[in-house]
Image 1 (cartoon, rainbow, N blue to C red):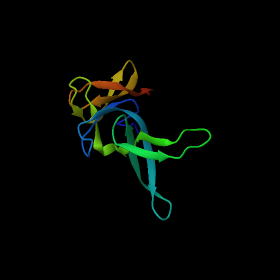
Image 2 (image 1 turned 30 degrees about the vertical axis):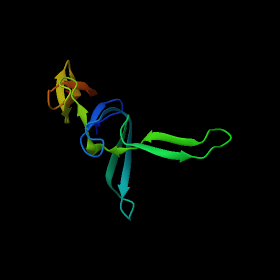
Image 3 (image 1 turned 120 degrees about the horizontal axis):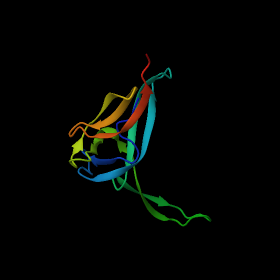
Image 4 (image 1 turned 90 degrees about the horizontal axis):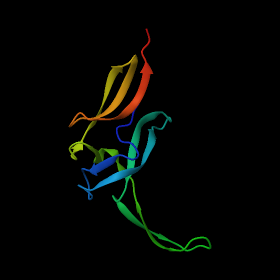
Length: 128
């Protein structure tokens, strides 16, 4: 399945202490949730956004690295961010559109607010 939020996307935080902040997605983390039998019951998706959800960590000095306090971005749930529409600059939901072009079925990722096509997700030849 195609991802609605990908690495490199410009997103805005819509919930939480950093509400309203914009940043680029640095990393997408997917983790499977399992029940006691080991069966997959769901997937938790979290994203690391540049300049959002900053944390501080105290690091002890070693022979290789210097100690001190480092600051880093912690992951937040993907439901707390929305893609920034490239046309309007407003937060928007993401959808998909399948179009027939030159004998191919082309799947696009689309911004719902303006209808702008963001990128090609897949391209498959039409079988006759």
